[in-house]
Length: 158
Image (cartoon, rainbow, N blue to C red; front, side, top):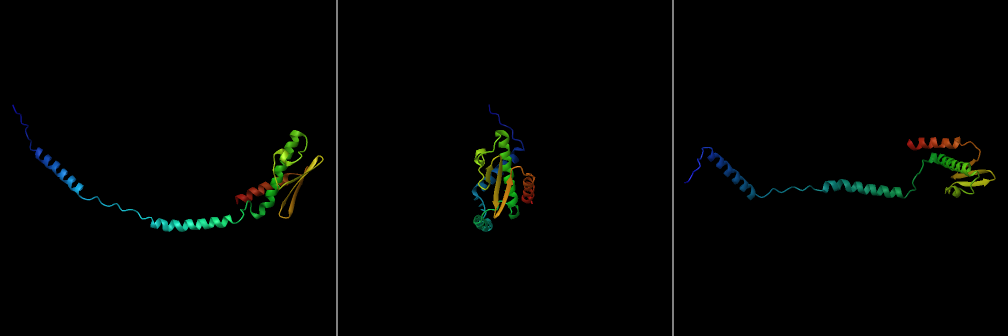
């Protein structure tokens, strides 16, 4: 016994719709894919290449000069502050060892620019900035040397 499915009146539009979709998909598959336009690197290179060349030239020019550690006016203050730090290290050593160190290397300092001279129970620290000598003798007030740090901070930040 054969049973035939009843076709409703709505089956025909559905079949027609499916057919139209399949035909449209077949047409799209047959049509060549559109070419994707590639971006040109020429404008970017035209801008970046001169910038790169200028930065390279600037760096080469800067390398030919010695770097400025401190602005010209602050070199004396930097030297004073270094003497302050060395004096503090010596005072700390004296507090623990109750004697002056034989050299700065004995307390772990390798300050080539600071000259340390021991004489009995006193010492002298000296350094040069250009042709100017900056000297500290043990027992002198350390405040002027510490104040150099304040001037250094203000000069570097500005």
